[in-house]
Length: 187
Image (tube, rainbow, N blue to C red; front, top):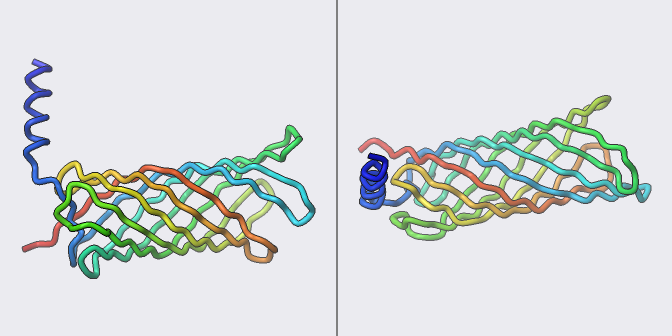
């Protein structure tokens, strides 16, 4: 019975018209999960390593074919470890802001390649402090459509973050995976 079910689902999956709805007046909702590791050098010369796990839900609208504008919220937990010591600490961060996303290939492809840039304003809370920050991100990667609605994204990106009232900035390279649901406009 399992073989018949698997065979039936495989045939249905392969017979679907596999493309994303990246055309004007469509909506997309989804998000991604990222992992990043950042090395930070402070003004006084000490080094720390940050490990960050991030969840970022988003909603976007295609203002023209292949170009979407939207809003992203990012929630993440950070662990910091000072180099050469056994001390560590944890932080929680929430960011929000607009994004712009462009798809490079035709909208009827089973796969596509996109580039996204975003700005986010946020707050970071630790055990005894609260900081405000501004971040700029660039993300790119392929998206593979499982059907006409759902796409899985494989992300590589770069983020630079400036904390309000502090010198310098933090730069991160990220790798992640995302899921987008493209809602087709009514005909």
